[in-house]
Image 1 (cartoon, rainbow, N blue to C red):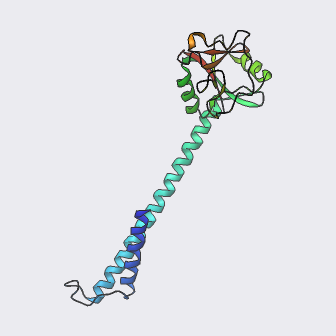
Image 2 (spheres, rainbow, N blue to C red):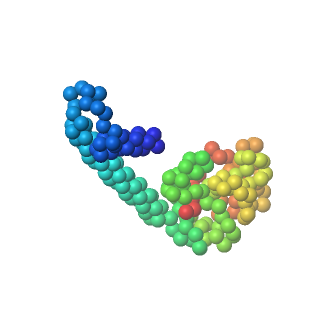
Image 3 (spheres, rainbow, N blue to C red):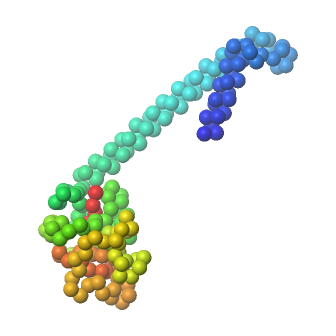
Length: 198
C-alpha cells in the first residue's frame, strides 16, 4: 500500500513537470533550464510507466504461479482420494502416524481426517482397509466424553463404539480410531494408519 502511494505521488509530480505546470524558475536546480526540467519530467513518466508495466507483469506471473500451485495440489488430492459411497476418502495403509501427525498429513493431501457420517459409509471404508486401527477426526481433547470433530469443532453426529468403548484406559485415550466397523478411543500418541476425507 505504501509503495503504491509513493508511486502515485511520484507519478503526479512527474506529470506536473512534464506539462510545465510545476516548473521552478531557472536557478532553483542549478544548471537546468525550464526545457531540461520538462525533459526530466518526461523521463520520470516514461520510467514510471515502465516500472508500473513491470510490476503488473510480475503480479500477473505470480497469479499464474499461485493458480498452477493450487491446481497442482488439487491434482495431487484427486490422485490420492477415492470415491467411497458419496464422498472421497484416502486410506493410508502403509505409514503409521500418531493422531496429530495424521491430522497434518491429511491437510497436506488437501483434506482432513475423516468424520464418518453413518454405518453404511463406515462399512464401505472398512472393506477398503488392511488389518489395523485407523485414525478418524473425532476426539474428546476439549472435554472428556464429548467427542467432536477436530476440524469443525462440531459434536459427532455418528458414533459406533465397540461395546466396551470408550473406556479412556489409563486416562490417556482421547482420540478416535476405527478398527473393523467399530470405533475405539485410543492414546493420541499411538501410531496408527489413518483415513482422510476430501
